Every structure is written in structure tokens, then in C-alpha cells.
Amino acid sequence: MKKILNTGFICFLFCSIIFSAHAQSGPLGIFDDQGDIGPVKHKGSGTYDDKLQQYHLSGSGSNVWATHDEFHYVWKKMKGDFILRTNIAFVGKGVEEHRKIGWMVRSSLDTNSKHVSAVVHGNGLTSLQYRSKVSGVTAEKQFKITTTDDVIQLERKNGVYTMSVAKQGETFVSEKIDSLDLGDDVYVGLFICSHNADVTEKATFNNVRIVVPAGKNLVPYRNYIGSSIEILDLENQNSRIIYQIPTSLQAPNWVKSGKSLIYNREGLLYNFDLATLTPTVINTGAANKNNNDHVISFDGKMLAVSSGNGANGASLGFTVPIGGGIAKQITPTGPSYMHGWSPDGKYIVFCGDRNGEFDVYRIPSGGGPEVRLTTAKGLDDGPEYSPDGKYIYFNSVRSGLMQVWRMKADGSEQTQITNDDFDNWFPHVSPDGKWIVYITFMKDEVSPGDHPFYKHVYLRVMPASGGPSKVIAYLYGGQGTINTPSWAPDSKHLAFVSNSSLLFPVFPIGN
Image (cartoon, rainbow, N blue to C red; front, side, top):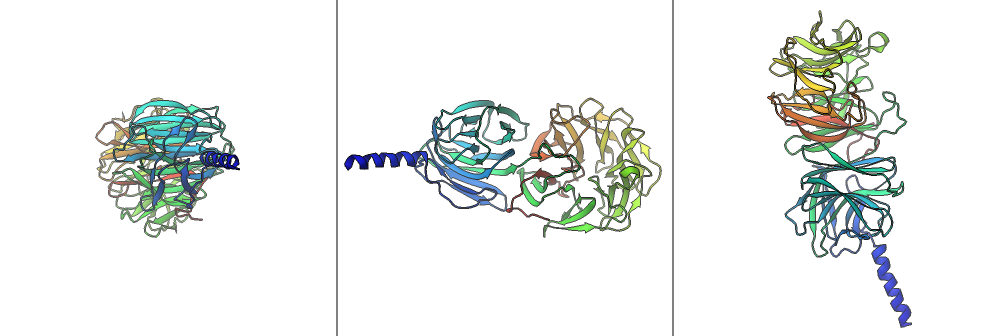
């Protein structure tokens, strides 16, 4: 009898390690649940700050390594392809240099489960760690980047796992694993491990996103996935999702008062009240086939809009009072895509296709003869005046890749501003004239003359006076993200659109 009891007790201990109990506490932000994995000595916890949309985790555990793991985990069940992204930082100096935080994808909540993890260590080491079989030995791919102020992304696409990491403000570098089978039904989430069973560590995660990308059978400009409006604080680079819909909305403009945004959806323009988080349709009269090229005059009184009222649905330029009213056609032909008002309100600059060549044109805001400002071969797009009216910024493919350019208001002295290995679109000058924000596409995903929906993109800023660019947002978006000026009047915030098939009840959802 004694021998049987001892055997049972040993079996109980073994099972408690391999199939450890997981504290259940219910949904946390965008996650389903949380709990400790493995026989941790000190119980971990996770909290969600709904004002800042940040997560605060604490946890102990001897390690995430070798044949089993001990850590605290905040998780969500997922299937199919996904993109996980967050900004990540430890709280305090910490004890062990190899304490760990990051994203983790697991086959189960067992301590010896197969997994893949995008990891930041306390000493700044970043690595892609994985266990390819139950109770197998953990393997690792280390990055050359060493920093504790990181942006971490872990993506699953067609069974391939890719970890991307960047120092805040820089572009991603990546590592892949293409031979890891965790099953389709997995747990994904944030984790923390102190690397010392007697110690509890803390970490903060912001800009936490779980994205379900567009499916491979999606037909562009016919099928759409969900859209989220985000507000980015340039000082702390924390972004908050303020509104979601299951279809497409695009190109938020910030009105002069700072109290609302204007965006387009399914041919109509909406005024989105930032206090009540509710949209109201703007009456744009005959211009009722609006695309994402709409711009507010500097005095905040008028809109220039682009509506497919031309032959064969070609976009034409119109003006309309910002509160709605009669639309006045100002471009005689199309395609014409409105992008910028002059500060004095006398002119509008736009991208126009004339005789098979897209160039930048200027036209009186009341209508009249259009003037061609660019003549280089290839696409010139996205023109916008500087607040002092001296310059027009635009993007051009004339040098090979799409880059940001600048010219004087009369079209002279056309000068390339960015010169890198990316495709850079839609420069927007901040209201105080100090900064330029633009969207960057990856050249291995997109051809230079295209800016499609549903791609990996960066938002980057550079000084208007010249100097290096830095990344301020890492996201899944593209067409409609910032096609038009989206600076807040204070020049300290930006509005933009990101995309995902997966929406979350923790954020406001529209119809």
C-alpha cells in the first residue's frame, strides 16, 4: 500500500509539472485569458490600462528554455495566419540579465509544449527561440540588435514563422523558421519570465496588436477587411485604437478645431466626432463617389474632394463647404486626385492623368486653367503645400523607387528629399512646418508605382529642414492609411488607418 501511494504521489508531481494548472481570470484587453505556465514559485499577473491601451505584466519562473518552461502568459486562441506586434520594455533594472519578455506562440499550455517565441532579454539580446517537439530541447536564432527598447513582431504566414525586431525608430530586421509545425490551432500571447525562481520581474507592452491579414484569395478594390482609426502621440509614440469597422474606411483628415476627423467610406465622406466617437455623413452633393483623396483648406472652411463622376468612373476634383453643401466641379477632366490647398486658399494641387502620364498640376480653387508642374517620366503623386506656401512636397518614381521630392510653388527647383531602399509615399507637412510624415512600403512587397491595401508599412517622420528619418509606427495597412494630411492642429498627434480581419470588442466597433 505504501509503495502504491508513493508511486501515485510521484505521478501527481510529474503531472503537475507537465500539465500544470493555469490560473483563469477571464479576458484581458484583446486577450482571452492569462495564467502561469509551469511550477512557478511566485504567481504572476497581467493588467490592462484601457486609457493608454497598455499591458503591464509581472512574473517569475526559472526559464523559458531546454525541455520545459516557467513564466506568466497572457494569451488568445488563434488559427490561420496572423501578425503579432508590440513595443516592449522591462520595468526597472532587474536581477537576471537573461530575464525574458516577448511574444510566444504555443501548441498548448503545458510546460513542455512546442512553441516559438520572439524574445527580448534583460541584457538587450533579442532572439527567436523555438521548441519543435514536445519536451524537446529549445533552439535559438540570435539577432545582432541589442537593446531593451524594442519593437517586436512575430508573424505566421502559410506555416512560416518570422520574427522581426527593431530599435525604436529604426526599420525591422528579420529571421525565419520554415520547418516548425505547431498545428493550426495555437495560443498566442505576451509572456514574462524572471529567469530566477525567487524573483518577480515586471514589463510594459504598448502598441499591442494581433492582426489577421487579408487572405490570399482577396480581390483588391473589390473585397476588403476591417479598418481601425488610430491616434498616435508623437511624444511617447503610443497609439490608441479609437474606432473599428469590419469593412474599409480610409484617409482621416483632422479638422482645424481638432474636435473631429473626416474620412471616406464607400463613396461618402464622414465627420467623426472625437468626443462621442460617432460618424455623421457629410452631404457632398453630386460628388457622391468619393475616394481617399480629400483635403481640408488651411482656414478649415472648405474641402477639396475626388469623386468618380467622370467618364468610365474617372475621378474628378470638386470643392464643397466642410459642413456639406453643393459640390462645385473644378477639374474639367480626369483622372484627377485632389491633394493640397495653398495656404491662401487660391489654388489646389492634384495628381492628374493627362495623355497616359500622371503628373502634379495646379488649378485655381474656383476653377480655371490647370498648370502642369512636373514633366518627368513616371508617376508624380501626392502634392501638398508647406504651411508657408513656399514649397510643394510630392512623391515621384523618377529616380527608380518612389521617393519624396520638393519643389518651389511655381514648380521650379525639383529636389529629391528621401533617398533610401524603400518606396516612400504621401508626404504631409506638420501644421507648425517642422516635420514631414510619410508612409513607407517594402520594395520586395510592392512595385514602386503602386500603393496597395494590406501590406507591411512604416510611418516615418523627418525634419522639414532636412535630416534622417525615423519610424514612428509599424503597421499593417497601405492604401488609405495616410493618403491625405492627417496631422492634428497641435502637430503632436497623427490619425491613421490600420487594417485587420480581426476586430476586438474592447475597442469601439461601428456598423
